Length: 361
Image (cartoon, rainbow, N blue to C red):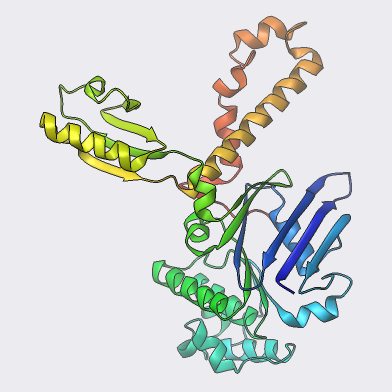
């Protein structure tokens, strides 16, 4: 068996007819870190719950380590580890007591000390849960997920609340688990985390996978960018003609599919003309940009849906809405200009380059 996880035409519908997962098909090989990303309401949590065996799919199939995780839960559960967003452990227990309690329900559990040392809590074993910081509680959640030496590990927002050092340490631990053969399913709102950790990733939107591949493959389709400031009196129009430059507030940005060639041409021009490029920054496209592009399309789609609903209610191009709404700046494409698109992007969870944790559904 080469695949730890297999999903074929996986669907999940809730009461009322809402379909959160709409025909997902993908595989995850053994020993791979696979990140599942998406905007709020995209269906990530609903998908992961199917793979963890917490719910049965409405249709389609899911296989984890060759078994149906819901119907053959007894065969799957001892071989997987699950780190939820919140452990919910009794606050008056000590760290060591909590691990021992959990170990009593886990087959082949690691020794308590080994589990705590792995996540940097070896010296905190006597503290009560209520005395731990938020980051330390996340480390404890991870220690408990690793207790049974899982073959498949589900990590839901594993570094929330950790400082920079703790986040890097967790990344190294996850990589070491991967190198030992553990398959890791990662959901995170830190796009940098997914870009650094994942061997492959998939971005979900409205219950479907809309983009997948290695981080390099996902970002390769987007242009790189070069940014800099020109000296006063030097307009962007003087740049080499083939460089398509946009100027905004004294800063110049060039989007390009040939970063090395265009950067070389820019530097040659700068040297030959004695022009200093202040704040020069050249970089390939990021996963964040690919993600924001999908989130932006989501907002546009929702704006069109609202516009269509207004039209069907008699508020569109005919009837009383024909003049009134347009004159208020909300007709004929004015929904986006009126601020709906930007508000929708915010509601999709994008803030300072990060995706907020979605509500468990």
